[in-house]
Length: 253
Image 1: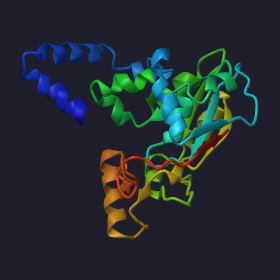
Image 2 (image 1 turned 135 degrees about the vertical axis):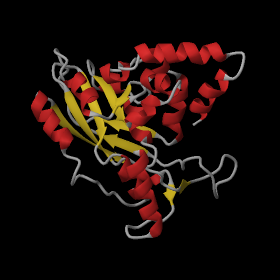
Image 3 (image 1 turned 180 degrees about the vertical axis):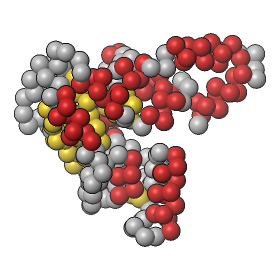
Image 4 (image 1 turned 30 degrees about the vertical axis):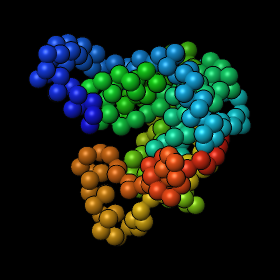
């Protein structure tokens, strides 16, 4: 919302040309997210991501070698509230993905809605995020020579509504398209489980059948994003706030 507000606000100031030029750039750059985005290695390697890694802490655990001559579809679970583990492991260099899996480049899928937000779309593309649609994923899996790893939070945004500490609920009943896509393109499936992902935030109880859950699911079906009511700790106190708890996240793949 801040980026959208800024875009339109500038139109009514003496800096209106910035928004106009950006709109022209956006027109010609519209398909870039579906073509692998625009990863910037410098931003992925910033020291701030190491601080993020050490805060929880977050660790990436390798269980098998992955041949860089192949393409991969990594099924990530659980989604959690903010997908902190997936972002740190597959969008930054802080946890050593490049060293653990040499020759592979990871692409984390994100709701297409966010790639329609001015300015913000360019930021998330710099981290290697691409839209979570078939076209974007297939583009990477069709690349000859291999070396691409498409990371999918298999439960999607609806799974965030079940992200309660101490529970792991995966939504797969209508989410098996990633398996079919991997088979169509000869990509290897890699299961990835992130222990502790659901522990970093508390969420207001919303069991199925309650009015809160009905409203959340209704809004999710309309907007495409889920809206979990989460909370954790504050900056200087530990009773309430939106800062995530310092709980270890161990991502095994």
